[in-house]
Each structure stands twice: as C-alpha cells, then as structure tokens.
Length: 301
Image 1 (cartoon, helix red, strand yellow):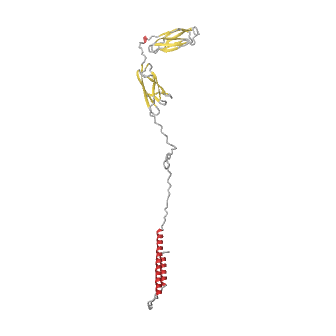
Image 2 (cartoon, helix red, strand yellow):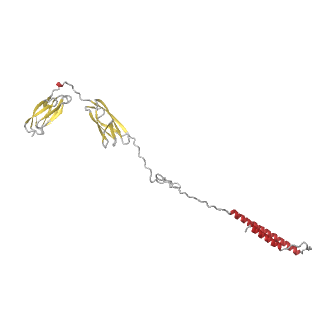
C-alpha cells in the first residue's frame, strides 16, 4: 500500500469519527450539557486522538518499510565475460623438475644432462730406441725407430713415420757427413704434441785416391777343391773401387764389387759339380774386361 493510499485511509477514519458527534448549531440557545454528556465528549475526543496517533504511527512504519524496500532495491548488471584461450606453450627440452610442496628431497631427474668428457691436455709419450744418441755411423741411410702413444702420429719435419697399432714407429732418413740432429714430433688425436731429439754422426769410409793405372786387377782362389756338400770355393783380389767382379763356371757362379780400398771377395757354390772332375772357373773384371782362370775339383760324396 502506498503512502497516498494510507493517508487517504487515515483521513476517512478521522471523518467518520467526527461525524459520529454532530456540532451544535450556533443559533440554538445554549444549553448546559449534562455531566454524563461532557464525560462522553471527552472520552470520544481522547479516543479520536488515540486513533489518529495510531494511524500516524502505522503510516510512519509503512513509510519506513517502503524506504528500506526502495533502498535495498538494486539493479543487477550481469557482466559479459569473454574467455580467450591462451596458445599452448612448447617447452624446448626437458620440463623442469620442481621440488614437492612442503619441502623434502627433490625428485630425481629422469633424464639428467650427460656429463661432458674431460679434455685431453696430456702430450703423448715419445721415445727414440735406435740408434742411440751420439752414435757414429758408417751408413748414410739409417732407420730411426721408437715408441709413442697408440693412435698418435710421428713425423721428422715433413716426413711421416710408419706407426703401428701398439705405438711402435720407424722412419728411414738420409744422413749428412758429420753431425746430424734428428728431431721427431708425436701428435695425438686431441692435438697435443711432444718432441724428442738425438744427435748422430755419419763417418763415410775413407777412399784412397790413386791414379787409374795403380788399381791393378788381381784374383786368387782359396781352396781349388772341396769335400763338403755342396762344394764351394772363395775368390778374392783387388780392383778399382766400385768395379764389378764376375765369377762363372759350368757348375756355379757369383759376383761382387770392389770396396773403397779396392778389395773384393766372393764365395761361389758349385752344386752340380761332378765328383772328381776338374773344371775351369773364370774371374772377370767387368770394367776393364780382364779375365783370370782357375781350376776346381769336387770330392763331395
């Protein structure tokens, strides 16, 4: 019920209360009301005031309820929520392993990163086993040998040595007359290197220089006969250094060269020589074509 409706209702009630007690006409002669009539008038007036007060209290209460209702009336607006799906995030590599809530030991990573191999910074071992340091050699061409780390390479300057699977190596080098310093370098697969050096001396044979006419060609037979099987003989003599000496027969042959001193020697085996038969053996100087002849007999049974 609205405030206007309640006020109208209260007014109608007041009007009805007043209409129950008609007013006296002014032109009527005043008469003194009786005692009971005045008491009744006071009672009616008091009742009227009480009714009006009650109506006012009710009106305020209803108004208060309407105000509270109006105050508590709210307008609800529903906000429109738009949900946007975030694109999935791809983690490059294994997902991080987080510790459990509340502490405790961390879980074991099922795919831990592989430990990197230690870097090899150790130079390979290198040793020279022959020839010995300080050796004096008569040959110009020498084979150097030694050992190193398996899998490493060995070189003498631009020349590569032959290296076996066990690390043993060898290389052939030419020596110069006099002192020679040989330096070798070993390099492993990691690029580490080490060096080793030795000094050797090359002493070439002494050559006696004579005029060509002074190098006489000579030849000699040692035995001339033999009882051993197979039968053989030894021949020796002189010639110019480097001269080729050729020994031939019907049952065996051989050859040699005169050395730097002009000496030569050769052993000739006569495998097919007949028993007890003497035959001729020829010794020839291949430079001067000089020839010397000898006899030989076999007693091999």
